[in-house]
Amino acid sequence: MSRLASIPVSVEPIEVSPRAWGNSLPILHEVRHGLKRLAESGERTLIDLNAMPFGPGDEKRLFELLGRGEVEATIDALGPTRVWETAVPGVWLIDHCNLEGQRLALHIEIATIPDLLRTQRQDVQDAISKLDARIEARAGDSDPTT
Image (cartoon, one colour):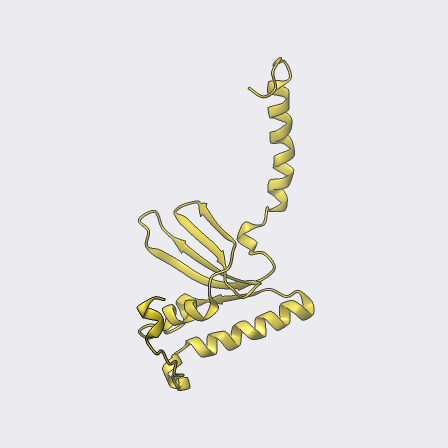
């Protein structure tokens, strides 16, 4: 038996006043309302976190409370944009940066999938022509896998 097993451990709850939450608690309530709208009507919600007056530790506390889910995507267009689902299904964090890595925008999007990851209708129309051109260019090849 390990000596560590013989060390007594007790866990004591920490009382946290709503004031200590800063703006995390109001944002979580807004997220909850957004989830309710999404569930009832399919309405999406976008919360601009850059517009929120965060105090020290507010952003970190909010991210910890929302947790990290299983889905993440990175988009490289005029700088990196990271999109990840939180541990709360349907609640996505979207972090837009410029080419130098400076944050331009930070959003919470409440949706089944963020708009940023959806293929635009016009892109689908253009995709047909693009695929047709690729097929036509390869039509004479004897080995289509090369």
